[in-house]
Length: 237
Image: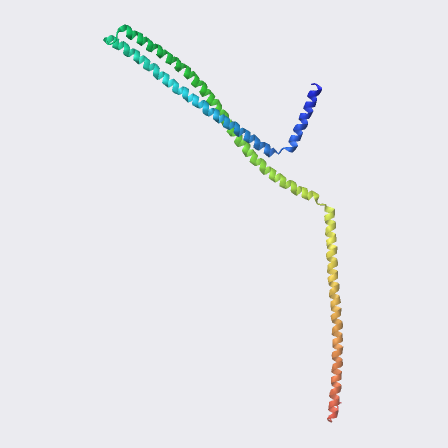
């Protein structure tokens, strides 16, 4: 192989590699099915045409056979009329001979048409086999395409999930959880602190109110004693 041939092979290999990377196998399969369906349409068209020719040859065989029989019958009738004296014997022989010649010609046509019919029948059988094989292959590819599409969906979903899982850093996740725990603990402690402050505030207020209440009670007692003394009621021992 010369240098140009090797360069061509290398370029061809790289081209195939690029195609393998870029082209979608589903699209390639769909295109293959479309191509086969076009071949099927062509095969069906050819089958219809060959069948038509086979039918025509079969009809020709029957037509030529009928004509051969007709010419033979006419030759017999001519000879019978000559025997009866209705036609001159020489004229009857001449016409009967012509009729027999036409009979032989039609028998040759019969033989030829039968040969053509056999050829057409063989072609029909081959085309029908091709059509059957194409239909079977198309059905197989269509079923495989359905399976392929389902597998692609599953693999894509699995790939996306695995990709997301792969992008999760376990150490960073644990660190984030620890920070969240610290934050929650801090918030809980802060809430408890505010609660204690609130309780302390309430205790001081209650103590102040209680002292004020005691002072008020003492003043009321003194006033009561003064009132009793004023009206002459002695203080009880």
